[in-house]
Structure formats: structure tokens, C-alpha cells
Length: 127
Image 1: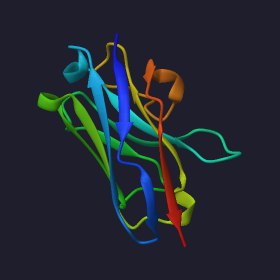
Image 2: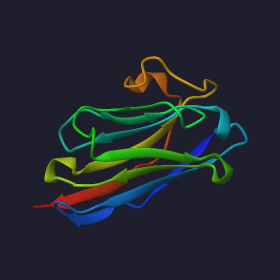
Image 3: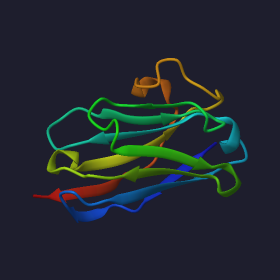
Image 4: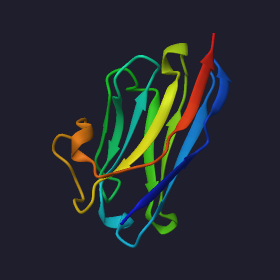
């Protein structure tokens, strides 16, 4: 079993930066793939970023490419989402997700590929 707890959300002006953290419990964290998704009010959950178990393979949604970076620290059981050049349309609840056993995921932009989810952290970007 893996438990995920997100933190780092808040209110920021457009053009600013935030770093989200996702702390994971469970001894298998360092061997599983992780992802970030977001959901804005009235919209479906959207893929944001993916990272494999080693941190060497990453993937991003088109809307965040070049602005967001996903990182992981397996020694700290934590995955991060560094968000730069934030826009009002980035406003959403951001969720951390983990696969149960796989170190990588082929269809990493598909939320159904992930087995564990955090409670989410609110990010609000003002214009």
C-alpha cells in the first residue's frame, strides 16, 4: 500500500513559480512510476507530468511543456513538480499519483494506469 500526500500549493501571481511536493509512504516508492494530474472546476482531470522509477524518463502534457519539471528523490520518498511561468489557466487542484508495481508506464497520460492517488493541493494563479 502506498499513501501520497501533496503539499506546496497556494496563491501566486501570473509569471510566478511554485514547487509542489508529494511525499509517499511505502517501501516500494523507489521502484514505481509516478505522475501529476490536475483538475480545474468544471473540467476533466488532465495529465501534467510523469516520471519513471529512476527519474531518467519523463513526460509532460502539451500545456505545461517547457514550464514544468518533474523530479524525484527516492531517498526522501518524494516527487516534486516545479512550476515556472505560471498562467491563470494553470489554476486547478493538483494530484499526485503512483503505479502499484511498475517502474514505467507506456500510456502515462492515462489516469487509469495509476493505482494510488493523493488528496490534492490547490494551485491558484491570479492574473
